Length: 124
Image: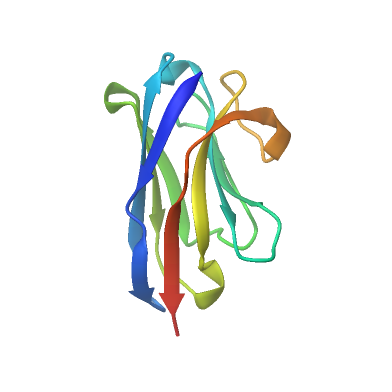
């Protein structure tokens, strides 16, 4: 099991930026693909972004393409999500997750370890 701890959420005005971090401990972080998901009240969990074990292959949800960037630092066991041009509809609890294996995809069922989440609230 990999333990995941997200941070960096907060309240920001529309058009602003935030950078989320997710620190992993337990198994070897660099062996696994990682992803970011989010869930707004009353809605299903939504795929945001994912990367493979090295970070050189990335995927993004349609609603965040061109605004969000996923990256990782394997030496620091840390996953990042840079969020720019934030919109009120980006308001949600953001989770990082570890995928089975080293590749990446957008299927929730592929991810086996989850953090507790960090809240992002974007005001209009």
